[in-house]
Amino acid sequence: MPVFSPARRWQPAFYPFKKESLGKRVLAATERLVKGPLFGCRMCGNCLLQSTAMICPMECPKGLRNGPCGGVTPEGKCYIDNTRKCVWRCIYSKAEKRGTSEKLLEVLPPVDWDRAGTELWTEVMKKIISQGTFKFIGSRFSPYREKRKEIWDNVFRPIRQPDWWQGDGEYHKPLNVAPVSELERALHSGRFVVTAEMAPPQSCDTEKLLSLIDQIKPYVTAINFTDASAARPKMSSIACCNLALDKEAEPVLQISARDTTRVRLQSDIIGINAMGVRNVLCISGDSNRVSQSPLGNMNILDVDSIQMLWILRRMRDEGIYLDGRIIKEKPCFFLGAGSSPFALKPELQAIRDQKKINAGAQFIQTNIIFDPGRLDRWLEELDKRAMIDKVYILVGVAPLKSYKSALYLHNKIPGVYLPDSILKRMGKAGDGEKEEGIAIALETISALKGTRGINGIHLMTMSWESVIPQIVKSSGLI
Image (cartoon, rainbow, N blue to C red; front, side, top):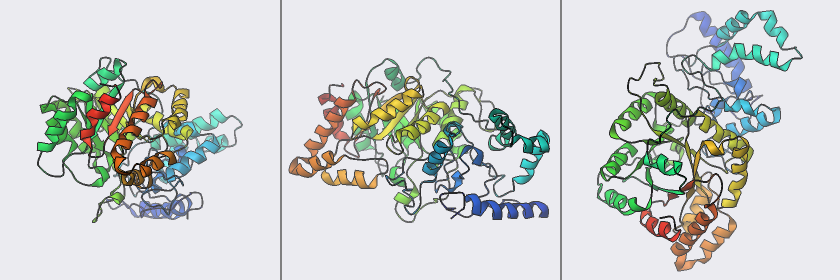
């Protein structure tokens, strides 16, 4: 176990893709030998330690560089490898103790793979020399905190925030004033909105999908098509969105970071805008760990969900690609993100969600919620950070089909927790399981309506889409 880090390096260190000079190879080997045991360093070539409480985020099995996913277990373990602590939970906790939590709001860049495996010490020394070596060393003993911070940032900020990224921790208000989609228009009007999630088919047959779209379209504002949920291949979210448009339904494109590269992300967003899709939801996605054998690469994501938001927001508002090229006809879309309000302490989860809002999220879809009262503290923390009025929140609601499905959600799905009272009700329901599950969903919706900061619900029926009309009518939301 690394001396200054709570976990261990999950994968071996990176090596450069091209042959370096002997001197650089020796420096890289030395850096690897020093930083590996101390920090679990993977030699990404773009060190972020100064922003992450001196714990390397590259120890995360998903390679997340901007915060945890929703897969933190109640014991604080990683759901991909439950023998290890969640690295990001440790980062958040350590930053909280050190009083540096606000640093976690800085949107950090993806790996520049041209630098991966190469040494960083030469660049650090050049920055120190440019500041003045004695000035830099002397600043570490200065009684003036702001002076220490300024000189330290002058050295390390250009390293972690290269010119092609320039991330920050500030809120970036969308430049679009008028709503660009029906979903945004409905939320902007102040209505309590209903959206639904639909699982794409596992074959090329679209008959059932089209029938379900027709069936639920009158009852919801938008339909979210999942992107290979549970890391299992199904019809693509893009194809489903196109079919929904043909049916004059409002689609939400879901993009999972797990299967997305920075090139594919930017290409797809230009394509879906040409198709007429205006709602985009960026999520981390389930790890290949929950898929079936043979498992895909679990090593690293090319971009995480917050980096996706940052890239897409800049494409829309600034009209530039990640490589700096100008987009002549800018795309327009309504950007969303996912949230697991109970994954961390409310104070820390609010930091994670504020970062998403700052990066570009205009609406948030939460994980499935069965205990609405527990949302209050999370909403209070977002309100303290002045985020409630900067984002629309859609709370995930799921009608339980059976006691077995309730246990599965409670025990197997990270970030989803069912109170004992709900489990007992489902256990005692007998042949009336479905009716009891619908009743619980209606009670949840009733508790959410009128709550400040909650702008609607997102129905996740887990392939039980036919129940959506009944729930919407019975809840009085039609």
